[in-house]
Image (cartoon, rainbow, N blue to C red; front, top):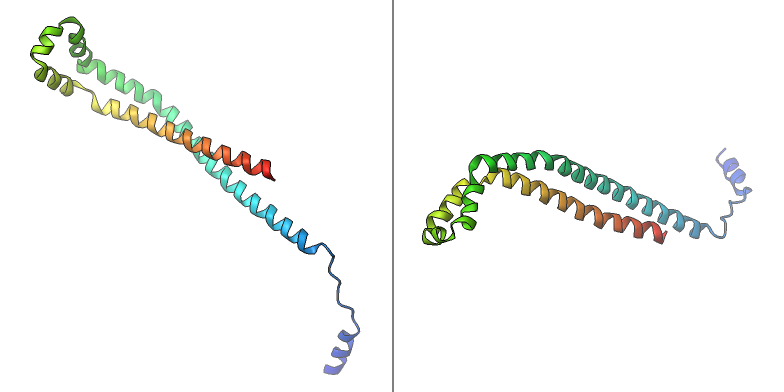
Length: 140
């Protein structure tokens, strides 16, 4: 029975490979690689967009918080002394600077600066990745 199988398979002709099989395979691998890179870049792009949208949405409350803290602290009144009574400020400059530092609304300004930093960082990240996506699609 074993010999019958061998004889059966010995009369079959092996399939012939197309002439350009290697080129087609390499082209397909290259397309899959580019598709994978493009998917990864689009994912990174969407994460960057979420960062930009989140920072832009957080900017308004952070600005209002900094504005409220600034008006409640009296910082602008101390700062206006530079323009209205400069000689007194120069005479008591150490106390004046200490008063400015004590009334500075640190939390509001830090929150505002953090949202601006996140926005600009996300924008930089987004611009860099958009550039690489367009160079990838133009080369294909």
